[in-house]
Length: 455
Image (cartoon, rainbow, N blue to C red; front, side, top):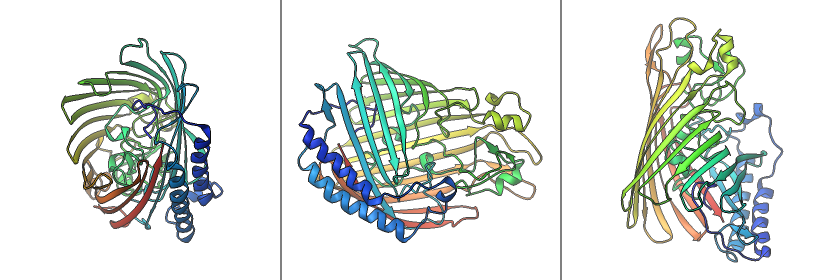
């Protein structure tokens, strides 16, 4: 399945009975892991759950394999189509299982491990003429509740031109990996650090000084500060791969044309996408992508928007929360030829926060992420892949020490995948994480397996 709104799909019509069998396979997966939803306070404690999580995930993998294989053998790997193709429905189901992660290297802003997740995405599109399409996506992780991941209207002013205007909960504008976060598009099981690793910054709370910030190194999975909201909560990544922002977006350019451009105005920021505004500000983002030769894609992105909430601004007697922003620049490249594909992406993000007490924060707080990824097809059904990531942070000067404001992290992940069917894939990977500082475990070697099914 292809992500909602990212690329066009050509749906194939077939009898509804086959679609019912496909949905029944998804239903089996849900039964395999069904459990009552947990309140937020329990999510962190359950991150490294043992036998229960192992049993539920293995049942999901086995039932998913049997059910999905039986259904997929009878239907094409394309979205369901109804009403002469005016209504299409697709799905992407992934079940992953990995070992314990006491260092919380893979904790996400959905409060789950990226290596231990059952995710079900169901997408839909309704075409109302040549100019208007309604697109949406519903998502559940570990069967903990269904959320509207995407819901927007696409308007094409000229039917014969590649110019679209989207309004609602829209696709990401910034970055390259944000366009391929679905398990069926990701050659490995883990995510690049920039899009998943939680830093020690929060939009609703902040440290009073540099010493307090330095004391929170590596604690982005669950931390609290003395300024603003003093309850425990998670930090934010540089760019969230798990939530879409709300606003208006314009895109121009053919899918495989020489140049394409995207611009958006949204409610949240890259690290904290929102459905409802919390600071009366807007983020502006843009991306330009070029295809100068066959197999080569290069892109650059930029974004700037208010980061802290109005409530946090009031707590430090600041009149305008819009002064304290997140700004980011990104560059990426991809080259594919014959059996191999290589990718590179770099992101620089900077946050401005209010100054409260001495020793003052050295602003802006910066983070730099670099990611190299490669994939090689050994046979038409089997491939090998690897990714090298590093996430670094600028220094701040405390009373006793000068150090990065969060602990730098390096990740290496190697693995591979095998296509059981055209739209049923099994993956395995090994990930090595190293963190230079902080209170939590600094090194980890984590294995994981994943089953992916889509249509």
